[in-house]
Length: 345
Image (cartoon, rainbow, N blue to C red; front, side):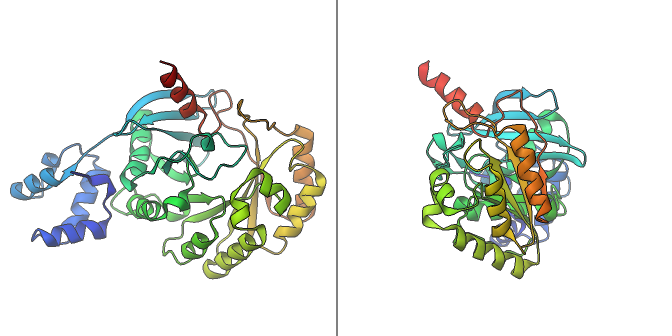
């Protein structure tokens, strides 16, 4: 039995046609599932009984089990969910000036092995299905009793390493009769899978793109991000240029500041040279330290100095406001902690 949360409108239309039903019922089903958030097809009042029985035999209304729920003093909430197969994933709900944003996970574990990241401490076991990504939004919204208006795909895993399910996920949450989360309110981040950036440039929804760069040159990036050995910075910049030219959309550059590694004024000038003339926006991120990793957060003065160099070089930049600093803030920390507890039990 398949999850109803993993079906796009086109997939539902195909299913309906196969069962001799009118394709227009796809919109009815989507509206009931997401607008009314029904838990059973029996709640649908404008669909004939015989077809409801067919739906019940083919689809499930599965949910995620909430294993842990942390709430920060600033309102940030982190959920640890258990999937049907027992694997654990993290989801974060953030309160913003513009509404509520959810950061979703796309894989169980991660193979990118970024040296500073807690997510990569556990190797990838599998991709998440589209339904399991959709359910993170539904469950976080229900548990916090809020409407989610924005989504960032920056949780555990490399989204473009699970490309097809992530694209399906976008189509499901963007549907006007469903969750109706606007494409421009969704951002997906990649550490630099260059071929997928070219493919993504041809995607028909205007979902925002962010690049986890974190270094201004190949030497530093080789040390902290193994993906750079497969796709050099020069190749990544060319892919970004192609995306901007094809979509006429700005790209966000994510840059975590690591003490003594990538946070000097010289590094800032290198970054400014690298991004000169590109329609990009740099998001400088204070590092959430991970006890198993040797990296430290940059000093406040160094972060400000780095920011000032970029500003003077006319790079569009912000120093990101921290959220959830008093809970297991780094992506993957809560999952790792629970897995370690379970292994000791």
